Length: 228
Image (tube, rainbow, N blue to C red; front, side, top):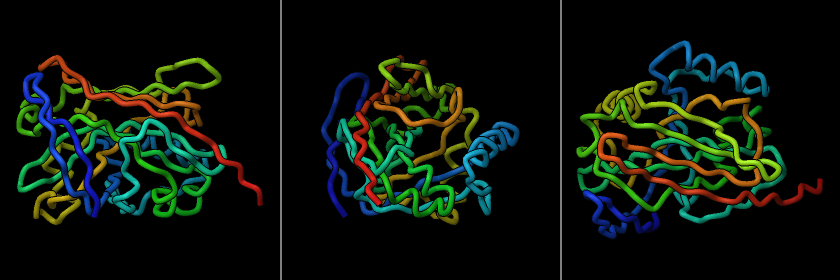
């Protein structure tokens, strides 16, 4: 267990809140549309990554992999980010944030579970109350950009109506018992425009077009050499 301090955005007023995070869950293949879901599965199969045993599927990684840092270090040049909404349970309430499930794709080709443990998972420092956005959940937008060789390109974009509804996602992952306090769950992602590829920097956001606000973050990717 460790503490992370966020700012809860309530109509533009930011209130600091320190949360004790003791488990991290990475939900995969959470698409509501089976065609779009299968497109992402096929995208990963091209990289040698096997199809999941179930859809959706819930991977675990160390809670300490979650970070608010603006840079991460990775081994080799085979990792990449993915924008996702993040749900965090706390004292019976659920907060919504935004993060990147940065993953080692080479490791993912032989073990998805191990790959989830290989890289830090950057998250933005701002949260919203789920109850403030659940009424227009499907209208919210996830986006990411990759900076590759100095060029910033749109990497992912989609609305949350493409994902399983929040209640379904939580019920399936926790046997209908609700999101546990101290649990941060990443909610799934979209296919990458132009295919999955590494980047020098990854930026992401969750936009609420109804309440006209965004949660955003970005981080540099520092590649460490693999010597043998």
